[in-house]
Length: 553
Image 1 (cartoon, one colour):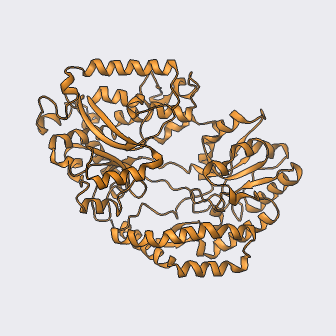
Image 2 (cartoon, rainbow, N blue to C red):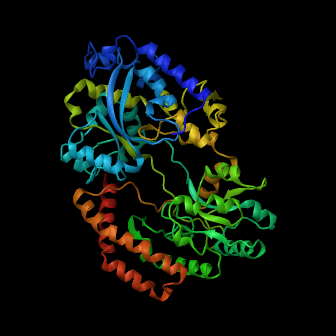
Image 3 (cartoon, rainbow, N blue to C red):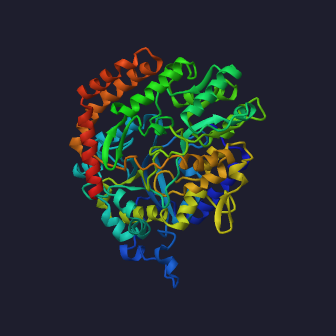
C-alpha cells in the first residue's frame, strides 16, 4: 500500500484527534456493542426542532450520546489507505454522528469468495455492503435472501427512521420503483441519484493527430473509416483502431450503437432483443471484418485481455494507435502524464452513425438507483436499537448535509463553497503529495456504496476535454433502448445463469474469428443457429419476463 505524504497524514491526524476528543467519554462505552444508557426509540429518533420547513428531515446530531460501535462487512482495496475509517469524510462522519464502524474487509479481488464464506458460516456483522445484480451478491438475489431468512426486509426501517430516503422515494417515482424488487420487497439501502449521469464511456480519438492532418472529427462510419486510413497511410500507424479482445464493447457499445444494436440484451418498445442474433449486428460485423482486412484495426486485438490492454496508454501516447472504442473521462491526465508529445490531445468522439445527424439508441446506461448498497442480516433485526442506529446513520447520507460530506469531504479541507455549490479544492485536484485527483477524491470521500451520489462533483477532478465527453456522447445517443434494472426470480436466475454462462463463453471465443476472417461471414448464420441451439431464445424469454414484471411494479 502506498503511504500518504506528510501533509495528508497530518490532516488525517487532526481529524482523528478531533474525533477522539469528541467521543472519548468512556473507553469501555466506546468499545461496547451497546451504549451505557440506551435511549428509547422515541427519544433517540426525535428530529431537530425547527421552525424552518427546509429542516423537516434533519436529525439531532450526534445520533448517540456516547460513541457506539457497529460492525460491517465490505470489500475494499486502496492504493493509499488501509481502512475506510482513514477516509476524510468518514473521520468527520464519526465525529458528527458518534457512530464508529468496525470494518471487516475483503479485498475487491476475492470479494465473491469472501462473501460466500460469510454466508456459509451464518455469522454476520451488523450490516453488509453488497450488490444487487452484481458481486458480491446473494445467490438467487435479494428476494431469495429474504426468503431464506438471511437478510431483513427494511421497509419498516425506512418508514420509521429514514425520512431522507423516504422523501427521495416519494419525490422520484423511479427511485421508489427501482429500490423495490418485483415482489415489492426492499432489501437494500442503495446508492441513489437525483439526476441521471450522462454516458461516461464511449469512443475517443487522438484529436491532435486529426488537427495535424487537417481532418474534422468523424461523425459517421464512413468518415471514421477515412480517418483511420489516413492514420495508417500518412502516419504509418500500425494500429489505427483498438478493439477489446472480444471484438465488441459490452460496456459502452461505442461502435455498435450506430447500427442500433448492442452485444448484449436491450429492449425496443419493451421487447427484449439480443444483439448477436439480429441482422444489424451481422451488418456491423461485416464492416469490422472489412476494416480488419484493411489493417485499420489492431491485428492482434484478440490477444489483448483486460481493460488496460485495450485502452493501451502506451500505444495511444506513442502514436501507435489513434482511436479506441472505450474511454473513461479520467484518461486525459493519465495520457498527458506519459506522452512525449506536448501537444497531445485525446478527445471524446461522437458515437459514429450511418448517416450524419442520426442519434442512436444505445450507450452506457445510467440509473437513479445503483446495484451497490447496505443490507441488514436478520441477526441484527433482533436488536431494535441497533436497527435504529444503522437506519439513522445510513439515512444521514441521503440528506443534503450528509450527501455533501460523503461526496465532497469536509469544507475548508477538501472543498470550498462557490456560489452556494461545493467544489473540490486544490488539496484534491492538485494534491501536494502528488496523488492524482482521480484517486485523491477517494481519499476524501466515500459515496460509492450507499446514500445520495452527486456525480456532478467529477467536474472538478476532470480535464476539460474529458468533461466535454458528457456532451459529445449524450448528443449522439439517447440511451432509450437500454434495459432497466430488472430482477429475475431465484428459479429464473438459476436457469438463466446456467444457460447464459455457456452462451457468453461461446460468443467470446467465436466472435473475434468473424472480425479477423478466420471464420468467413458466410458462417455467421450458423453462429446464430448455434446460439439458438444453446437456448438463447429462452434467455430472452427470461429477460422479457423480468422486464414485464419491472414495468408492472
